[in-house]
Image (cartoon, rainbow, N blue to C red):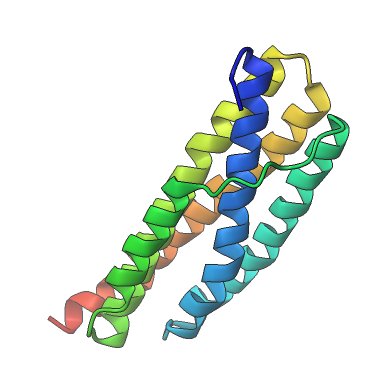
Length: 165
């Protein structure tokens, strides 16, 4: 797809996010199975449900524009997830594995926050107020998920991981 306008870039970025969210939906159940912390498991299960909602929201945004997501694979998310899978797959104590899971998940969240922030701004610039509001809602959820992971890490998981050293 040739990018001749901000709208073209906006649609390409939306397709990239759609691919990223679909990859996350596929990857999260595998990560959840590896957690030992009930609090972390619950947070990830909750975020998986939210992520399914993010996919639905992106589909709604495409419908607003009478478009459909292009069949492109988000290579950035593919790399972030592969790196996280490698880190989480290491031989580790349960607490250290949970700390690795949080780190990997926060990398995913930060990637998403950057992408959602950009496309939300494009939507605003292009006068797509409804789409911008939907994108902001998802961005807020990504920020909240990241904060929740930080809280779990600093209040419990990292402390337990330190004790195993």
